[in-house]
Image 1 (cartoon, rainbow, N blue to C red):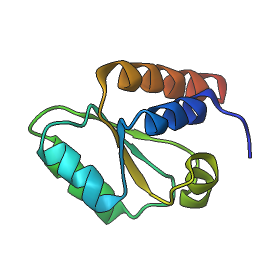
Image 2 (image 1 turned 45 degrees about the vertical axis):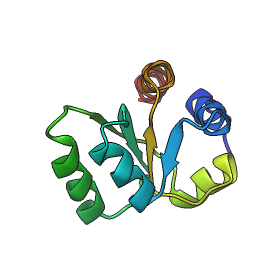
Image 3 (image 1 turned 60 degrees about the vertical axis):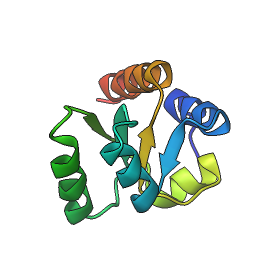
Length: 107
């Protein structure tokens, strides 16, 4: 497992109680307007992504895709989930920056 900064930051956010992980909890965070960003594993279904895009449309919540698979997220965060919401402005801003940096350097 590679050591990516955004996975470490997601781990910190999880320990701080600022993540909603898994379909039901993440969708609830979106509907309650707690979610700041939504992060998808690379192996989630297109149907799941579309469901969240529709739910996020009203508020312009950013949706990010990472290259890690569900099992990679499980290894990094200790919870098996294909969709995660970050429910804190500061964590979400930093995680989004780190994901964008990773993909800018990964080209």
